[in-house]
Amino acid sequence: MSSDNWKPSASISTLKQRADLFGRIRQYFDEQNVMEVDTPMLSASATVDLHIDSFVTTFLPIGGGKEQSCYLHTSPEFPMKRLLAAGSGDIYSLGRVFRNGEAGGRHNPEFTMLEYYRVGMNQHQLMDDMSELLSSVADFKELARVSYGHLFQEYFGINPHLASDEELARLVREKVDSSLDGLERNDCLDLLFSNEIEPGLGKSDSKQLNGVYVYDYPASMAALARLHTNEGGEQVAARFELFINGVELANGYHELTNAQEQHSRFQAEQDKRRELGRPVYPYDQRLVEGLKSGMPDCAGVAMGLDRLLMLMLDKKKIADVIAFDFSRA
Image: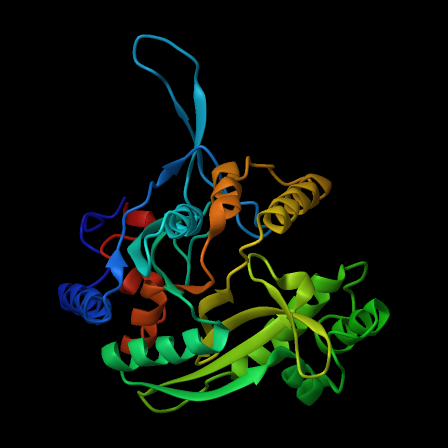
């Protein structure tokens, strides 16, 4: 072990800028009358997202009793939606989240996430609000909003909502890797997007952060977003992502409020994890009960604040913007 391994991975001046960023974010929400909330980091339920793994620990009651598996949260989303269903109104959370297996470069197994929900907004109104927030805390400019379908038409000459699985697989072999075969539809779409489209989104040589919003993702990628019909008459997910300098910064939804549909999606994701040999975690049944009681129409978004600070300060590694990265924790 290095003799200076006790030192922070980020400079003190960077940590001061980090504290200032968090303060300005809180000031923005204070002025908007959005309430800050704390939610449990340790939960009886976990993510069902195919691409995210949870940390698992065990609760051991003092004096005996039944042991209980618990999970460090990967996002405050589920308890925040339970608060919305209970009548909280507009809320935000600024705190740590945990994702197993993600370390190095732009990832750390624990990182800081801003997640917030605005009642009565749809995905485009939330994009407006995000641009206002980012402009108030950074040198940010919204460059464009473009649909997922438009980008695939521009880059590949296909409609991603209508293209056949065979057509997408062929494009992956042509554009990404000729040896890739047997991939599922969403895997093909993800590879084409991340390799060919994403690196150029919001690219800039200036210090200004130029943002591009990509919206109306394929219905198969809805996650916890509601579905709607786009201008072409296709069913798509009311979901957006924000990219700056080819980096994904935020992921937002016009939120699903249908309890039965949410229950079905949770079960489908568990089935898929089981099929792929991934760990299968218990989903949040309390969220489903909360949706049954009635969650208001709202839109929500999650944004990685370490990644935002990296972009603002032109840092290449997440270790450069947090006090102690995983190697020094």
